[in-house]
Length: 252
Image (cartoon, rainbow, N blue to C red; front, side, top):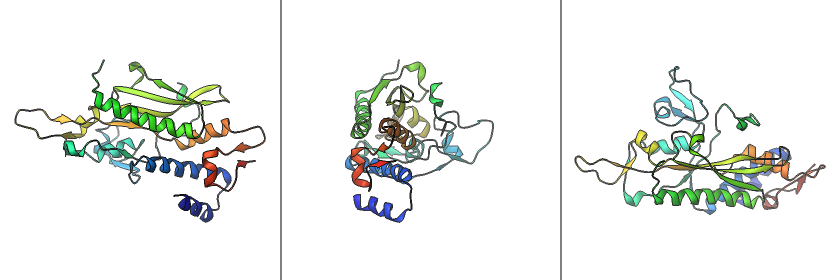
């Protein structure tokens, strides 16, 4: 992977700022591969029929307008749709995927826009904690100060039964801001998509799988956080963990 990163730097006539953004993306992929997660190819559009079965993000869709194709707002959407109308066995589970998304949504690029009792089986809780820990390790490796917030039920959408936000500290604002959202949706999505497991008998209800999702790295937000935390007034220092992938230690 390091050789691949070096090739990217040689082939692209990039500014240091563009190079750092590219390296963060590559470092994220390394973090995923080190944990043996399956990285799926990026899908930017979904059929309108499929999207109508999934929870929307940030009021992206106007339900009064018929649509045939929709830009996805998070990789969670195409990844969950992979299993639509599928029956899985115990041997198939768990399935853990990582995905990349351009995150088409209203608040994209709007800096500061973020200011504005369900039974949960222990099995999916365990994987929820694992997903959050992967994100924790990623930001700890960048040496960024963060806090984890358990979101109250009144602040969540209908899909999630439990949700954590990982918020990193932005010195300029003097506040912690969200970089990661990790949600346990239990069977809310799988019921709409008809994704279940086991053999169903006559008059027996299907056992729907539980679906969980978590951000690893929102690249632009993370880049803003690095810029604010690693500048000394004259230059921006490259985080130590990223220096082996670039040919410079700071940006003036």
